[in-house]
Length: 375
Figure 1 (cartoon, one colour):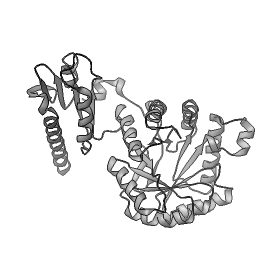
Figure 2 (cartoon, helix red, strand yellow):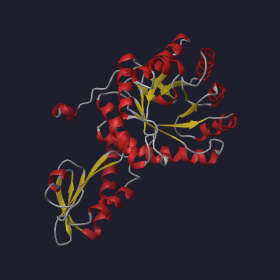
Figure 3 (tube, helix red, strand yellow):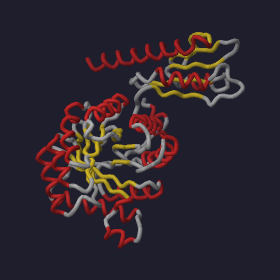
Figure 4 (cartoon, helix red, strand yellow):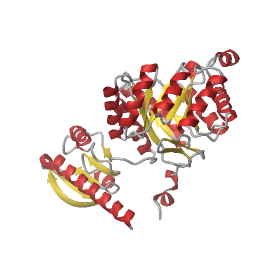
């Protein structure tokens, strides 16, 4: 019996959508929700941009977006695409010719903004290039750059204006017999974004790219994104996400995965369950968790680890994790394996020992998965 059959309150019923391909990554149609980020280097600096792409991919990014503001950037894109292990999305604003050049350079997807890409004739040229080179397209509506006629009609950026902008552009693509598109309608305001996305989800079956744009710094942006994206994902809306932070792109990837992991929508790496610590703790919980987060970053296998300072909740949390450690007394704590008490270990040996246990469990899980796949 599946865990969801036992715990139906953990189910998230995802909105049904068409599926499009971004390179080899499926988006929509029941595919796993993909995590994206965007480089912040000069695209013409191929070495620096590729380094960011590789770091993001190592952190788990499924797709990476690169800004293409000028002709030099579209020339550099060809080299970046060649060295990237993940699909590259070309971010296009104002200059539709950059989209044509990016498609030719090997971009897996073209992100175009209906508020500034130009008239229908230019969109037709972009569609032709996408068809010729096997690109998908993301329609990227942004509250900060809506078309003038919509601002005049509605008076200000609002959900209705954002959705109308997106649907108008969908019609342009469909009129050109192009259907390999996904769509986003971002705003920096959580309420505006959420309302627009809810209306959009009802108006189209296109895959939806979620994001709270210009969310802020690492802490404030993480909180704003977790609230906005988390609520939409909980409602089943969203096929691919990007957390927009004024921070290293790797941090965007980490936060994106943590949001998905918290909702049971993606599983990657070690999910550490830890207490905030108090006077009852049998060891320094905060420093221990900080060390373990660093030491276990290389683990990609989905698994759970509980680090609890005392026996109030420690044994109960350990029952539900692959590996657990609960603080005791006299400088020792209890190690739990597969939810059961297994052995004691001293606090000064704890970190190294837990890392060994997690690595061993990850290897065991990987071996079992390979054996199952071989049958």
